[in-house]
Image 1 (cartoon, rainbow, N blue to C red):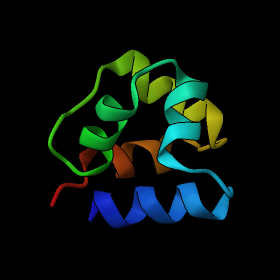
Image 2 (image 1 turned 90 degrees about the vertical axis):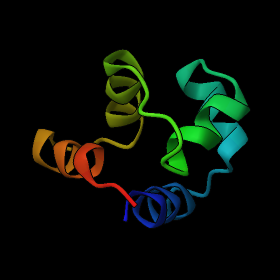
Image 3 (image 1 turned 60 degrees about the vertical axis):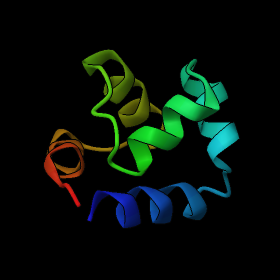
Length: 68
């Protein structure tokens, strides 16, 4: 589940949803929708998430395609 994976990733980096949203330049509500699988998010946003959490391309693809 993307929701669980993204939450775990965020928490292991000691970040709140607000922290992540601010660092990648989107609103808290937009990030919340992405983390909770209610919005897909742009390629640009996913790229910023990948960079923020230092994810490999394989890890990022796995996270992006994982749904509810």
